Amino acid sequence: MQQPRHRIRKHRRPVALGAATALVIAALATASSTLPLQSPASAGPAATAPLATGLGPCRITSAMGVQMSEGMPTQPGYARSTGRVHALNLMIDFPDAEGTEPAMDRLAEFFPQTTDWFRTSSYGRLTYIPEAPIRSWLRMPLPFEEYGIERGSPYEPGYRHLVQDIVAAADPRVDFDEYDLVNILVTPNAGPSALDTVLSVTFSGNDDAPIADGVPLSNTSFVYSRQDDGSGSYAQTGYRVLPHENGHVFGLPDLYTMEGGGSVGHWDIMSEDWGANNDLLGWHKWKLGWLDNDQVSCAARPGTTDHVLEPLATRGGLKLAFVPLTAESGYAVEVRTQAGNDQAVCRPGVLIYKVSSDVDTGQGPVSVSDSTKNSPGCTRLPNVHAELSDAPYQPGDTFTDRANGIRISVLEKDEKGDYRVQVTRP
Image 1 (cartoon, helix red, strand yellow):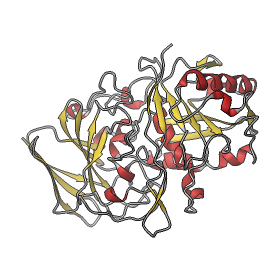
Image 2: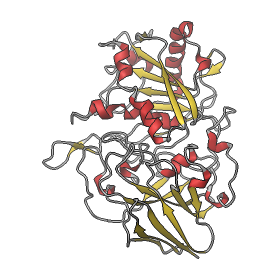
Image 3: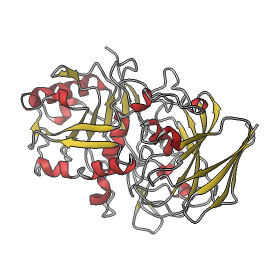
Image 4: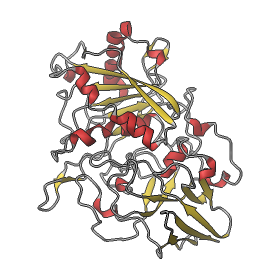
């Protein structure tokens, strides 16, 4: 029996922003676990996509032994991320933490917002279908405390016991083999407040999970408490923990660090899932199969190349330029604007970030380059990493990696909002 390998960030309680009312940089996200990498389950579409001519050097490889690697193809065992994906939602409570509201009200905290979020982010390529065949609370046989669930708890023994009890209670009314992933929506009064300790967690790629109707519950997300920062925005933003957790089900890593730091800020929901709405990075969209190969340009050859990039939020067109450094790293270049899922963009422009497939989830596999280093940022929205909010490069700006001889220059922005970017490499 293989044990899960956790990557858990240290929790930071939200703090006040000067004299402002809001909370900033709350317990930004949640936890994740990937179990056996050798699972025979089908991976996302990136695992089987044909190698496009000229893109080979830019498909940085998945490093061996790295949990939730940023490389391509996505390692096997995760849920597919395109087409019709059926999500089983089970609302559970406990003898010592009974649901205080209808179970369907708990479901309504996350839907249809989560479905809409995935539709927008994927340009319609992922049809997320939430189903709740049991419309009442599913009572567990043991008190919550007896499962021993805390932040960072491994799958064994507490979660295995809980999943076994969930299966026993639900199996007479649920055909588990009809679903691609499972969401366990726990009554909010079980466990601590998310302002104190974030318990929400995902176990993915776990073929050793309990079996129901012939299939293991290998991709399961657990959501606890409410991510309510007191700013009055919960009805609009509280659902976002679920797209983050389901991102792990699709094979995406945590982009914050275990030490509590952030190298990506609000530019990806796998970095910050509190506060204003945000999207995924273009690299993640390509990895998940939401960008076609002809929407990516690969700057692998020596010399100078120009790339005209359209805003990531819009459908069609060239979205991503990639500058490979090694077989396991490179720079991604994309245009971010306040559109689509990106609500908090206060300085639209060209976002440049390094992707490293040999870095584990929760250890900083992605790092955004800040075009305005040491600035306080351009936003004061609650729970948005202010320092990186003005990271995008503007026409006339140049990013330089002197060690590798890389220059990425933003030449111009046209009347349509497209940016011409020039890459120079030895």
